[in-house]
Image (cartoon, rainbow, N blue to C red; front, side):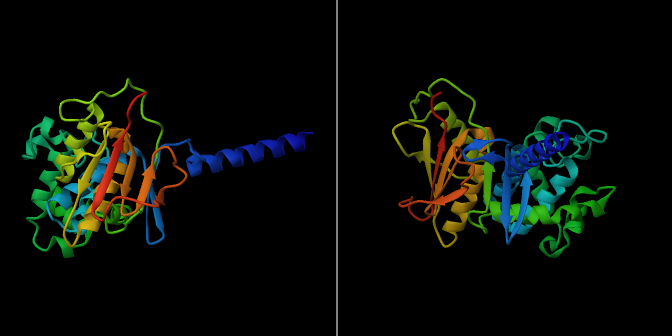
Length: 291
């Protein structure tokens, strides 16, 4: 009898561990997380960390900076704050990059704005001669002046994977397992044809990615973004991955791009092929609507 009980406990513990590691059972999310997989390497962050990585990366894309700049910035933020916009630190350090108001990085309010803080980091990075060819630890140190400069190199693997996904160089490589959006009353369209949630999305997209969307359906909860040019598909994937990475904060429930789709309600499927999707360079993003 005791042996049977032990066996049941072992099996139950093993199943629980497997479920927790997987993060979902079918369409039922168990543990919110996001995963980027590039060249066979899979790395996982919490949704808020992934959202920070997305903001950092798309601001590099918006500025026309190389993926290397995003890798340096992500590695720096992992070391400084674990990719969280914290309101404390050593002495007067604050935010994603632990920038100090007393050292001229900005006011506390500005530094705690991830967009401002990331922009300030890139402003300093591009002044570093040949930063693209420097080791991450060297480039980051020239910006940060840290007491522990060698620590930045420890986070290069995560930074490179997430930068590759979020710059669009690795299509379909980033997915998130998330709980359903918080229940809310039905979203009513405003004069601009958008619901309140869609309006929040379009403001965030404009500020972080530099792109403006237009209403894509009569509900006001779906936006269409269009990229063009030789790099249009890559930029579309960058925007699509940004939308998935920011889905936790922005109540995104569906993203379509390049003949593929991510649905928040099907965390077990990741990106799936569509029989008919938006045209090349077009990204469709839908936010939750109704209860």
